[in-house]
Length: 62
Image (cartoon, one colour):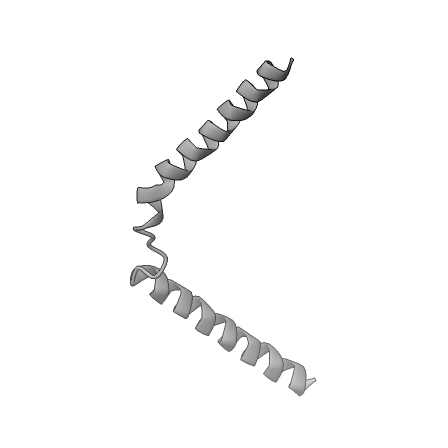
């Protein structure tokens, strides 16, 4: 029974350690992405062009 209590205590300690590391990473900007938003519009435009080309090709074949 005492082994279970030791394991529960150890698991809580490890979980708190991971939570602390996550909070530290968020506060230090580890999850900030400054590159992707600047190029996102390029990808959206490309998808729209592909959709328009598919639409035009399907109407030409009909």
